[in-house]
Amino acid sequence: MNKILSIGDSIAFKVPYLDSYLQYRGVVTELKSERIEVSYTAELETHRGYEKITHTTEIPLSFVVD
Image 1 (cartoon, rainbow, N blue to C red):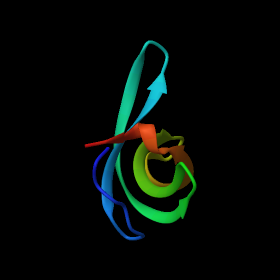
Image 2: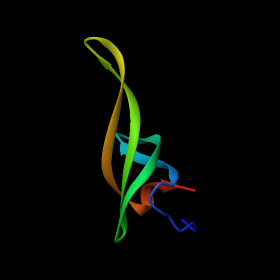
Image 3: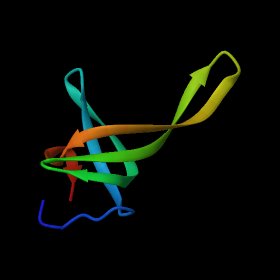
Image 4: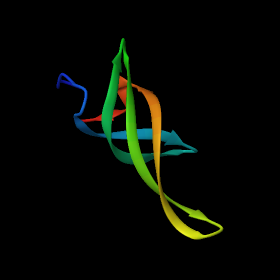
């Protein structure tokens, strides 16, 4: 990754899942050494139907997609 990230930047990132990856778009909420915290929204099926839920997670910089 060549871009220097800042808090508030919108990014795309991938997360390993089984033999593939899930890709999300999120916003950088915190910068750490070799890791960042991102907030992103996912649509999940619940007992009330589909709902948009906001998650916050910490990912390694290697998960960020250029």
